[in-house]
Image (cartoon, rainbow, N blue to C red):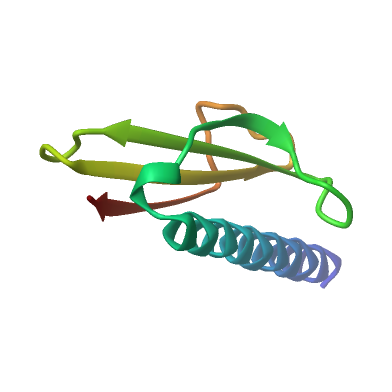
Length: 97
């Protein structure tokens, strides 16, 4: 029973972290879409401000992808010591001129 209880607690924590990370990624993606094609910019991985200081965010903007006058935007959210090679949540969209 103790192992089952511990597993449930860990699963609940993971679900909370995943939901928070997804919401943070969606919020950033909405900001990028609001500023538009011309102002979409890269952000290096950085710790987010309180109360989300357990999370890190990185934004990658790739010009002329998948075609000319388009940009692929990727928002990645990391937490729990995740490394750059191991994003926990990643959202992508395409912006057009």
